[in-house]
Amino acid sequence: MNVCSPLSIRVAVCAAVLGTLLPSPGLAGDSWPQFLGLASGHTEVKDLPLTWSETQHVKWRTPLPGEGWSSPVVANGQIWMTTALEDGQSLRALCCDLATGKLIIDVEVFKNAVVPPKHARNSYASPTPIIDGDRVYVNFGSMGTACLSTKDGHKLWENREFQVDHQNGPGGSPALYQDKLLLAFDGRDQQFEIALNKMTGKVAWRTERSGIGKLQAKPSDMRKSYPTPVVFQIDGRPQTLSTGAERLYSYDPNSGKELWSVDYPGFSNVPLPVTDGRMLFVCTGFNKPEIWGIRLGGAQGDATASHVVWRQRTAVPDQSTPVVVDSRLYMTSSSGMASCLNTTNGETLWKERISTDCAASPLAAEGRIYFCDAKGKTTVIAPGDKFQVLAENTLADGCMASPAVVGKALILRTKTSLYRIEN
Image (cartoon, rainbow, N blue to C red):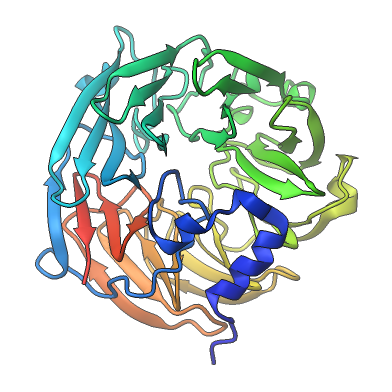
């Protein structure tokens, strides 16, 4: 029996916490302008394809140049991504036409004479862009951030002043809040968060991580993290949350002032914090990933003892972001073990293997959850307390990027191509 109520009820609950920071257009499928859309990997579209293959329900397929794991973002009939050529020396922005799939813009954003190291599993173009009206913001970690015109890819500004040692290459994506572009820089050597003026690229604020003293006692490779800031409305005010090594941080996005924090054991954090409107769910990163349920509201200073409600250590993601549907949390480990948790107490309701290699974040649609793996398979399940596979679909290559939704189409980026999949 499916105990989950309709997605619209979940959205109403979350809206009580997120307020206007959870706009309805992202849910309806009109656009998908940032990583995981505007609703943490949710869409209200009801007629997405359930089954597909290389020859079924593919409206178009476009081969992509270079290597990049950034997820596709969609607005105004355009699909934007980033890629890297020449082993990271040429960092580029790509734009495909939504209707035809034609590659209409391929522009070099940065040229590197010297390329920093990266992990073999990572790419030099992993952070996801953000579309904002007639501008698109692209980020390549310490190699630079830029704002481009969506008309022709012309560079409006760039900022390359923040140099940190990522060790494994760039990871976390930027976030927008009002007139600010939020970015986290958590390297082996330095750890801080910044806000840039989105119109000029100039620094609005910079805040050093308060956990630096704690991190100095750790080996340098355990000080890094790859967070994507997320902005929630909590206690009647906007708060930007990010997962640094060993600590979850909450800041005022207007000033960069730290509001509260929670300490956990872990580093190299990638998954974003997500919420069901009552609790916050945070993955703690490597070595042994855990997921923590943290009570929302009323946090001050070090809120570890006062606000951590439960901890779960089984099949926790270290790369993909979980998705919440009502009082259930769905996620997959990097080794392909999917599970469903009760958000109230962290109890595992089911755990099943769906793959052996997962990096992309799941997508929740009406009555479905899509899990794309890194080997070419997408497993579609029904949300609920019993594991139920609705379909398994295979493409020629796997996804490191997370899916996007626009109209009634899935936009999937594999390691080599971009697909529009539609009934």
